[in-house]
Image (cartoon, rainbow, N blue to C red; front, side, top):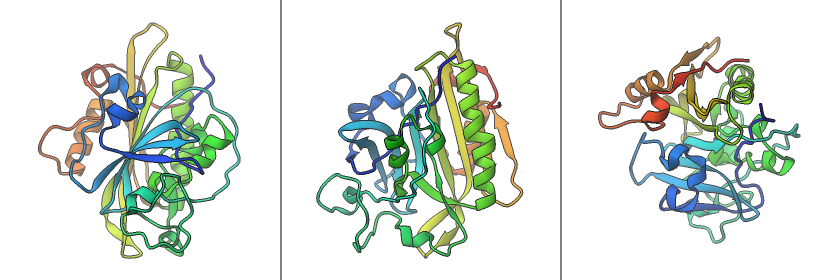
Length: 271
């Protein structure tokens, strides 16, 4: 049993590098160095989320819908952190100089969400890589980037925190061999839009894969509708992939992990 998820944070005052290939720049956040195959196209930008020249996790960002597709991270030790709520943006996505995560400072953003987009929208800025999985206070602050957030109803945000973030941490703590757990958390674009710019997800989902104490692969996943009175459905990775492939309307290849995780022993995300 190990301490618990170190989430991989994002950029808070450090830098976040928009890259051509995750595997060349930050492969450590992907099980067996295999990135999820979900969506492809010029609108999707790969970001190695870096703080103080240390990379903490990876995000695939959708510049058309202005929400992340997913954030991928590892799990290690977790600490109690203070939520600072200082939301930042990624200058590189809008061709501003410098690769430091910064405040918007009156700049016009064309390729990413702004803090103002969420004002009076009725939606929270829902983290994909969460504060609850942070390994340090600095790490927690780094999760507050709008490239790591998507519009989430307040009631569902609370349910996601209690039933997914906390239970994922518990599952990994109790079931996974230290430093072997990988998590991918993402969203499915819905039909609603806030501020005429930012797509509201219809669903949030998350999946993990790791090795247990017997050095065997285990995995599991969850998905929930971004709505009032939503329920969180437990799924195997294989079933979650099948579900998501339909929701994303993908006709070709689709996967979150390789076959070693897809066919691993199923362990539900639970306390």
